[in-house]
Each structure stands twice: as C-alpha cells, then as structure tokens.
Image 1 (cartoon, rainbow, N blue to C red):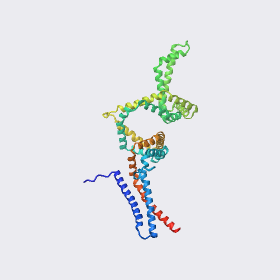
Image 2 (cartoon, rainbow, N blue to C red):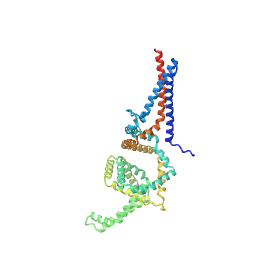
Image 3 (cartoon, rainbow, N blue to C red):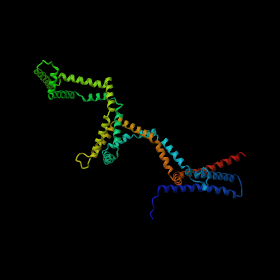
Image 4 (spheres, rainbow, N blue to C red):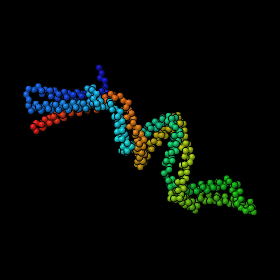
Length: 419
C-alpha cells in the first residue's frame, strides 16, 4: 500500500502524543518507585532518601500535569474552577493578542524603522531597471488598465490630481524657479534668436494692421496736417523696423542685442532676488491655485490619460502601450538608482505612508485579529494551540518531575542533617 504524505498537523499530533507518553511514563515510573519502597522489609537511610525523592518527584509531576492540562481542558473531565483556560477565555485571549500585536508589531514607528532597513526604493528601482522586469510590469499595467478605468471614479481621481497639484505647489516659491529656468534656457544664441523673432513679429504686425495704425496716427496728429504726411509717418515707422530687422539678422554684435540681453538678465535677476516681484509671483500663484483653472486642468489631464489608455489597440501599428510603459518604467528605475537623494525621498515618502496607514488602521487590524479568533470553535482552537505548543509544554512536566525529585532529595538530606 502506498504511503500517504504526512501533513504538518498529523506530524505535530504524533510528536505531542510521543512527548505525552514520555512525561506520563516518567510519572508512572516514580509512582512505582514510591510504592515499592513500602514493600522493602528493611528500613534505612537510603530507602528513606529514595522514598522522599520519588514522593517529591511524583508531586511535582502531578502538579505540572495539572497546570499543563488546565490550559486546554478540565483535568480528568472535572470542571474545576480556573481550568480549561483557553476554551473559556478564547475571546479575551484574542482581544489581548490583537492589542499585543497592534502595539508591539504594527505601530507606525516600528513599520517605518523596518522599511528604512529594507531600503525598498533601491530594491524596487533595481528590479524595475531590468528590461525583463520592466516588461512584466508593463504587461500587467496594460492588461489591467481597461478594467481599472471602468471601475474608477472619475470625480475622485480628478479631485486627487487637483489636491496633489495644490498640495505640492503651495509650499514652493515659484518665481525664483522660473528665473532659474529662464537663466539656463536663455543662452546668448537663444537670446539673439528670440530678439529676431520678436522684431519679425512686430514687423509682421505693422504690415497686417496698417489701416488701424494709419488711423491711430491720424487721430494723434493735429487736424491741419495733411493725410499724405500721416502716410509718410507710417511708411517711416515700417522702414525703420525693417532696417532694424535686417541689421540684427546680419550683425550679431548689434547694440540692440546687447540691450536686449541686459534687459532679459535684469528680468531673470529680479525673478530670483527681488522680494517685491517674488511676493507678486506668490500672490499670482495663490490666485491660480484657488481659481477654477486647477480643477479644469485636472479634469482635462485625467480625461486625456483615460482617453489615451482606452484607445490603445493591440493591432495598432504605433508602438504598443506595453513598449512605451516598459521604456518609461526602466528609465525611472535607472534614474532612481543614479540619484541617492531621490531614493531617500522615496523611502521617506514610503515611511510616511506606512505611519499614516498604521495610525489610521492599526486599531482595525487589532480588531480583525480579535474578531477572527472569536469566530473560532473553542475546542478546535484549544486543540490547534496544543498541537503547536503542547510538545514543549510536556517538557515542563518532565522538568517538574526531575526538579521535584531533586528538591525532595535536598529537603530530606537537610532534615536528616539538622535532626
């Protein structure tokens, strides 16, 4: 007959039964020794010593048997008070266990400290920077995107995006950042290109709106000046702009380039260092964040993302969403690994989230443990616990027998010496 595999519960039950037989056998042994001493015809020091040791060992074995048995059931089936502790106090034990785990294992600080040791950001970044892993994540994301889009609440997502924009931009002083971006972007070559484009735009504007400009000149000059003079003024303005346009295109050292560069540099410096301009910039930023622009932008952004994900088709000739996601995920992992400061910020964010989750739901976890244990059958619960720890508890019985015998031996010797 083929041997069936032994389950973990069966193995533990077999080990428990073996240890019970060993502890009970030791109790029976010292009981037989104690009883045999009464049938020895001669009495003396050694007989009394053996009897005292066996008697004390028997008492110790019985006491520890009672203590161990009382945890799981009534000894000999007798309903002695304060026995069958685990079945009778299962609910209180569950509540206590839930509180113990909550306060000693699931606090925000403990979880955050463990996360800090794990360095999750580095492990995640290392994992997703591998093309194979990035492809795996991309496949899961692409496959799950349609289902997520169908169940997600659009309004909640839009509110989350708007809240994130406001939360992250509110503490940021925007004006100096704009100044730094302009300073890095406006190289000398780009300044010259910008000036040329600006003059070209002015020239095009004067040509496209000549009638309006002529009317404006006519309105600003005295009535007695002939219309022909007004036309000449307009023509002169246009020719002057055209000459400037030609000169700045042909001469990179034209004085207007230098003046324009100095003006731009002044604006950049003011954006970064002018307290008055920084205050105005912050006021503008607060007005924008408090306006309808942010909710509308969040709505448009989410609709664009949702539309892009929903419109993806596997037979599309353009690069698949999986390929795009894989490249993006891999690049994110590589960029994270190359930036220790950013890794630290990600770890800090993970720890902060863990703290908040534990603060918000730590009580719920404790209640879940307590509620789960409350649903267990008392006798089955007692049996499961006994299978897990009963084998070790049998050593208490064995130790009680040995220690009891040694104490009896010591007390008998002490009594004999002091007589």
